[in-house]
Image (cartoon, rainbow, N blue to C red; front, side, top):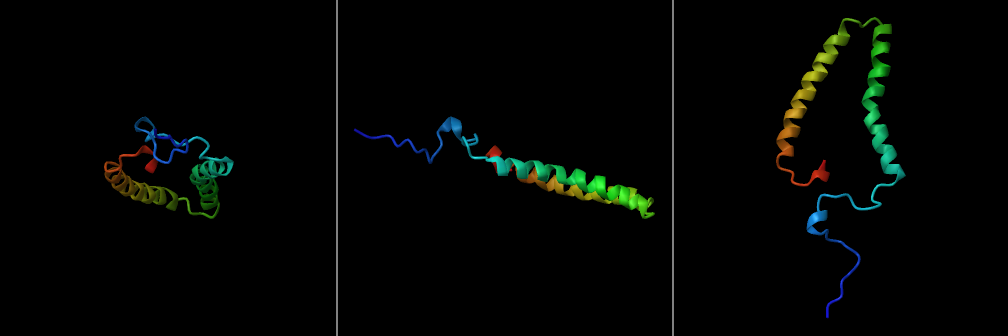
Length: 90
């Protein structure tokens, strides 16, 4: 007779792409929210300061440059995402 270990280290076939129960704590969720809000904080703090210091003409150019850099990043991200089978990898 074989005994079944209740401590699952290898997920079952249907659980492969699921998050383990109780794997994210308050600290991890707080860090996720703060990191997601960081770009908004940079824009909300940087654009008014740029206008105040007289760099009004440089602001659209900076947004254009950043947009181009993010487009280049997005192309690489999509190309890499095609090779990842597990949804939790990103």
